[in-house]
Image (cartoon, rainbow, N blue to C red; front, side, top):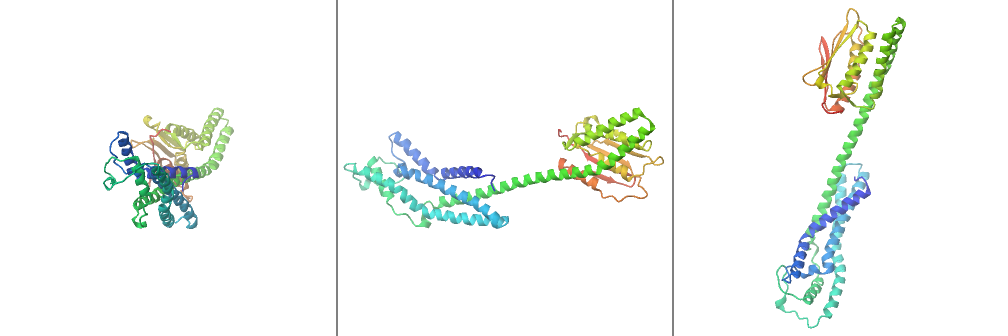
Length: 404
């Protein structure tokens, strides 16, 4: 539930200290008032029992240990419950809560005996002091009423400490600090449950990010598997055609653009988002290669608002759309294909082409668009818009104004 044993100890220590101070706050305040009054030589406003060693420190130590033990038990029971109950959350919560509650009740029954044992030492010290105080007399008029001031002597304070320490402990269910113990118990149980819920939420977020990364990598691999074989062989065919025709200048230009395309694709596994300017620069290089391959048959129009060039989109978003248009449409002298790439006032990048279906249309799995949609959704949180009409096929890609 928690990340490490050290963090468990630190959180348990912090919660225990806070609960100890909260539960004993009235005692601490009365002791402080008493010390101030004694310093000013005025009447005492708190029972003198609060000023003597174990009477003061025992509640602090006890409630700290009570809260800390309950915290560690509850944490460990959640771990045991996860293993035994196979992560059935409500059963794990009930199991850990029930065991911790029983442990808390057990500690509560020990409280009177521990108090008597610790305070017995303080009583022996006080009895020894009282024997050395001559002529100690306590009249009925000197009876202590807690919360009211009266002048007292140190000897009389010590005598009353002994008397109070010898008082019999009240029945369990009428113990004056039963409420405090139950408050600490419930607070610890709720605190551990809250920490578990927050830790679970954090773990879910980490797992989501991991799945997101894995899905992006899978989509990228699928995209590369779809592009690389066709693109590689088609590019070599185009280069071979230029060499055979002896067009040296165009061959050199073709090689430069081919190297730019390959460089961009190879760098794509290191980037997730790029600017529109970078993507369009790649598109121009890629369309040049296609223009050589389909000379006089395939045409491109690229227009983008200068204000949107620094906006971003997932890398290689346009490439599968161009590949899709080339794959599923007739491209010939009689039926040349025009692909338009432009931006709109809605901050969208649109890739549109006229629909010229092939006579023998290959079965399309749509994996290219699915991968693009998944990558877009994960990286930007936005959806692409696909419009498939009789005359035009159009895909709109939302642009993001977040810096790359």
